[in-house]
Length: 350
Image (cartoon, one colour):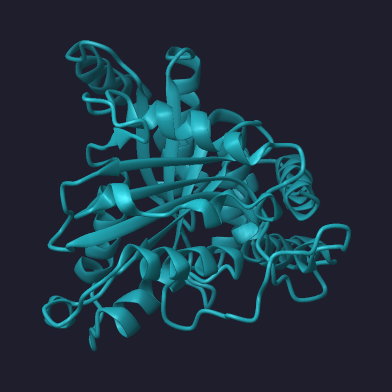
C-alpha cells in the first residue's frame, strides 16, 4: 500500500487521470465513478485510494462509490491490517459510499452454496459479478415507472447513504446456488423474502446457517445489537435497506416485513429507510431472485477486529519502517485509528 500510494500514485497520476478524462468525455451525462479495489495490500489499496482522492479533487460534483474486497481473516499479507486501516480512512474521506465484499463470506458461498471443491479466483469473481449484476442491471422503481433507472449509482446512494458518517454497504443474494441445484428448485416470493429478512436481522451472509432465533427488539427494551462489542452482536440494526426483485410475478411480492420500524435506527422513518426496485426480467437463470443492499451494523465486528490487530502491531512498532521510509508518518496511523474507531462507535450506537 505504502509505495503504491506515496510513489506509484504520484508517478502515474497524470497518465491515469488523462485516461479517465478521455472516458468521461465520452459520457452524455456523468453520474459518478465506481471504483473496484482491494484493501489488504499492493496496487488495489494504495493506488485505489490515491486515485479516489484525485477523483474527489477533479470531479467534486460526481459521485464516487468504491467496491472494496475485505481481506481474509486468516491473513493474506503480514501488513494487511495496516494497509486496510490506512486505505479505509482515506476512502472514508474521499468516497461517498463503500460497497464491501468480504473474502471469507464469498469463499463460503463458493464452498457451501455453489458446491465448488477447489475454489479459484475465477469462482470467487463469478460470485462477485453475480452479486453486483443483481444490483446494477436495469430495474424499475417501485411505482412501476415505464422507464428504466438512468442513474442506478446515484439512486443507490440516495436511498442508502443518508449521512456521511455511515457509508458501509453490504450485499446479500437469494437464491444463490450451482446450476445443477437450480434445475431442481422452485421458489416463492414469500419464502425468498422470509429468508432474506432473517439474513438481514441475524447478519447472515448467505442462506445456509441463518440464525432463526434472532428477533427484532421489542419496543421499549434495548436491542441485543446495541450491546458492547465485547458481547455478541446479534440483532443487526439497519440505517437503510434496498431490496431488488427480479423475475416472475414480481408485483405480488409482499415486502411489509422490511418496513418494520424495529429493524431501523430511530432517526429515520421506515418509509424513508426502505426502498424497493423491481423488474419482471429474470436474472442469471433464476426464475425469481432478490438482492438486498444494506447499510447496517454488518461490518462492526470485522472492522473492530482489523483495527484491534493493527493497534497491537502499531504498539510494538512492528513493520512501521516499511511505511515511514515512503513518507507515511506515525501520525497518519493515529489519524486512521481515530477515524475508524469513531466509525465503529457510530455504527454500534445506531
